[in-house]
Image (cartoon, rainbow, N blue to C red; front, side, top):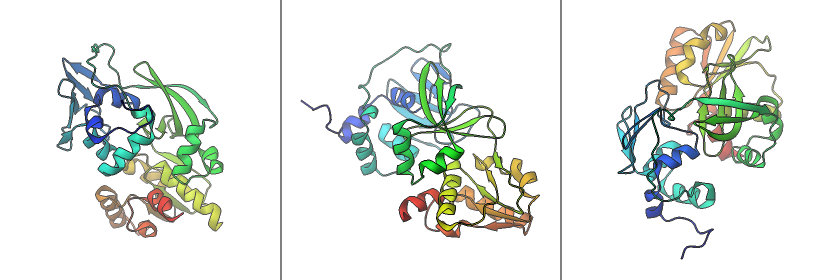
Length: 289
């Protein structure tokens, strides 16, 4: 008999209920049609649910990217990791070890993906401090720019690091969840500087602040896009500045956005050479320090 603290095998992870697991990372179905559960994709931003889980088969399929599979396949996409890392992750996080397949009836009336903010307070949870440590972000930096947010999705309550945008919505992150509350928007930090630094996600911004503490460089203004799709929304603020330094992800979408921006104006400069060979600034920080 398996002991309580022994890691799951690859075969056992594949058997875990995908619907139950998605709930643990903050994703609830928008609608349910018999055994088909439809979600706003956890793998990308969208407004119309196109991520389906067939609960009878226990398989997912994202129509937007044309990929699907079992829970292991999902974890590889969601966490951008290898099979070995998935096994290690599930072994190290007992909260991920959900019960085996269990058919539960969920009515369409109760299916909801809306994030409801319940409370906001200074960061105090040990699990969030451990998460910050794993991302190489100091408590000093995190406490200056983030808060601990308790939120609810479909009757389930969670808490996470919250980073507020200009319209009052929050980007919410913890070890297992990556969600946003409405309204979705950019975040700007205005110090009336002549230069502005632009980041795709707030962990890249926090990484930059961590580096500033070590280098003692003068701060500037900042834009955190919270989604590459919001770049155009940020342009009026960015283009008020003399210099615009782009610290975007070095993936296809980030590189394309950077190239298009530099073709618009000489103000835009690609600053991502700092973390060449890595997906983003935070990934480079984790590897380097």
